[in-house]
Length: 331
Image 1 (cartoon, one colour):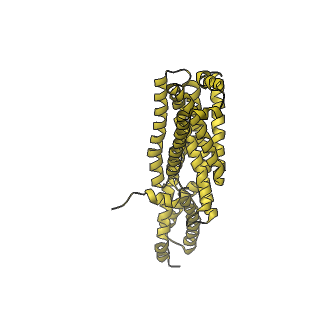
Image 2 (cartoon, helix red, strand yellow):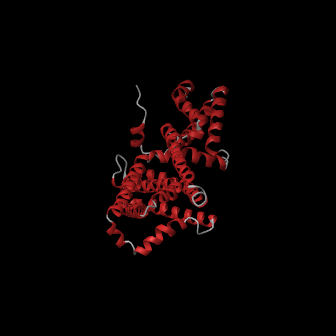
Image 3 (cartoon, helix red, strand yellow):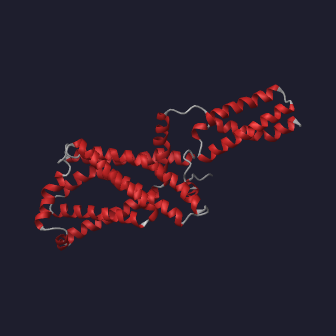
């Protein structure tokens, strides 16, 4: 075997293996698979060089590369905290950014339905008769709506709110593949929120309504929009897979969808804490400010960490069409 020719032919593969080994913490799914493939292939190259009696320097250099690559492929398990931090600093925000067009659009449509439902109550008082008796309506606006936030111990209320919201988001996420059920969940919740807003505003309790809803509601509803968007994207991937097969589209979108569940549960836990420990105890302006700041923090999180991870390719389960649509334009 001509050793020099062999080295010349395979040197690009060795260089590529060295590059992937150095980037082992930031590889996409495809690059990780390429790393494993090259590790196995270069192992056979090393065996061939040894059999051909290549010089010790070349064999030693390639042996070192194989050892480094083996550490990247089968090395020690990374600490759990590192996996957690990578999830919340890379994977989760990138998934949020990847689906931003979906959940922002869903949010805008949701609030339009809320506004229409509230307007219908305010402008057409006769509609209220179909909701409840005058005594029931008065009980709601004078007592029940506000008492809901303080009638139970804060820790119990926070847990119940978290479970309820997580269940709602999980249902929207899981049923999204069927499209219609997820849309119905959003429609029903938008109508109910609009009815509550309309009843409170028409009874001169609009300020109280917004001071109770805003602290937790902005971020909580955004989480529901994200869950719905993830589910609907899964359903749409089956209907319109693009250049991929339907199974490829479902697999790729499904990995991103399932991966968002943990992050959404954490966000909803935060909204439950705000609803239980902030809303009942702090003055209206303070709790409204906290709700707005929480929502702005979430948006900043998505558009900074998520955008950076999305465009850098550190997050592997992103539709290529989405990536190309937001890729920087080169000169």
